[in-house]
Image (cartoon, rainbow, N blue to C red; front, side, top):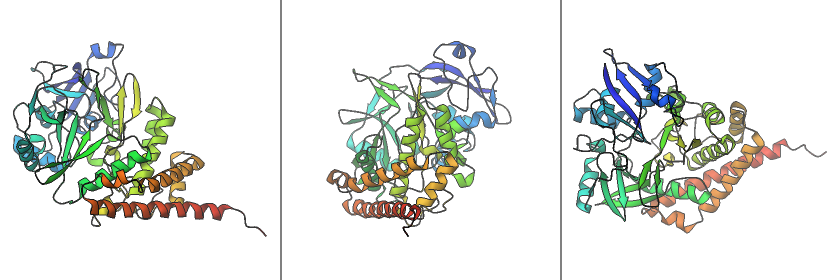
Length: 425
């Protein structure tokens, strides 16, 4: 058996093993389960003395790792199989999303409160950003053990007083830098517009900004799975995405590939959130907003739960992007609204069908849709929203798409309401 020790904020939780056939096995330490503050790593990994084997362990731990494209590149650089979850976690599982870290059994425990960094000059940042598409997460760089889920090239950094530094050892990062991919020109402007609009609408989203690395636009996202103390200390906050919580492996993040349905997500919040009513409302707001901006890629890994001080709450919304800005991308929603096969063809009837399927009251959902449409249309008139992206032409083009979609949905709701009224004789 190969073995990794699993830590949560520097505290030993259990062990992850790989047998000769390649299957994973996770077991909680009895000491962790006996602690008054002992908590499960995941809803899909409840506290129990029996081990979780195979697919029951894999959904959470594979969900920590990058998606297919970056994963293949990292595996080639490190000289390991891209399908070997354990080997990948062994090499880059030092800092994951949230507060989980995995270290070889013989390694010392993570040092909580460590503050070792490597400050980057503008030229060094430019060089790293240029290198990221070929070497995701700086795989193989000495002193770095970074793992972030997702398919886009990204770099966890610690930013203090505008200085960008690479966190070393167990030093927590505070931000994520995502350079604009060459195949999606304008992506930074689109995401910044959508995230800024979401904040103007009143949705819970992390702070974002634009930074140039040479001539490469980058979006800088403040991590929501971090707590900043009054003394500037940074503490990791445990999180997991909906696929991990529901037990879906990362390759099944889309509904059409056997991934989560909307009723699964709302059921998760009903059962698992400590303030279910508020989190369901906020999730529905995020769902409506993703439809309004034309985001067909809001899959199960783009929603998360945060675990803090005994609370289990819906995390801030992230990765809000108008995928309709690129006509060649799929228009099939990652999670279907009332069985609609196209993000461009979602009407009031589809929302009513979704309400029935998920057990959500239609009057409440209709009210949330009307409010979000109104706030979105108002937000698009806000100069701060349109001026946030550096690419004004792209921002205006996407703003026009969103404006038309919100106006169309308002009209669809009005038509549906008029058709329900009895006709006067």
